Image (cartoon, rainbow, N blue to C red; front, side, top):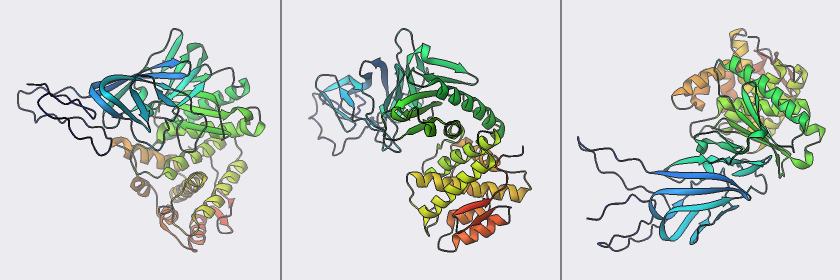
Length: 440
């Protein structure tokens, strides 16, 4: 009797049966295991293994499959792009994330070239960091099948992280470009100015200690990759589940004061650092919750540690409040479909309102970090949700979440006034606000 084979799509037909009709859409499937009997041994899970080496063009990835297949679908995602990837295995093609072969295969190889440009809200699948490369591990996942990504450093090189590179960003490159700092590692090449690198290191060390204290959680020891970007954005940053943060600065603007000024870098670094704690792990959490949380925490921590003055912090809140008013119009926050800068402006506004309400309603015993402590505790069993935010806040925050129409901003102004803050001109500006730095 022919042995059954678990397949990823398109297993070869056995001699006893005609070839099956092609699936109408390319998906990944693993043949279900039979129901266990008392003496049955659980079958080993189907796992795709991906080995990655640094390569002259960027990187090369070798996929090893658990069973022969003619088609392999890489995980579908709007957050990654693979248009610079190429198959180098004869007879194997890669088109829109679908790997196809006329003959069943158990192994194939792809070359990965760096993304040529940055695209908003999309992780670069591969970018250069000094003489090394940064890979976004989730881009290598296979749809519907457990995938393990293993980095294979050359002599004199290192792999960061050493395990589970599929979780987020990963680095392959020279060990000499990795610097150990207080509670973190920094990777950068000679293309990054020493002054910028020193500012990033200082702000990262300070913000990580501050967040650990305020959130009462140890957090993770991150690796920060600092690289030049092909543009068109002046700067971009991403934190990932692998505890690797990527900070990218457009090369043409590397020496411009407005991009590398300490005040700018302070908030940029602190924003990404906060994501080590508040990155969402639950489907459906709106982007303005975790992005606004990180941006507001960055402003508060920068004020608390002297990187921004109270006045500079309030001015940033004013700009976000005005832009959120423009973005929402008469829609409620929970029903508005926001994008780009709107996500950050309204996210910061929501966090500020929640912070003001928490402080005013507790005589200063609660603040934005107390709210996030509640959210993170609620999320320990699988991720925080918008419902957890509602449980941790009160009616003033609910007013911004749910109210709509022309009365929303005047009503919100009256609500925050009861907690010691003042909004004027229909959310055009924050004229007065409680001290941004927490007292604890």
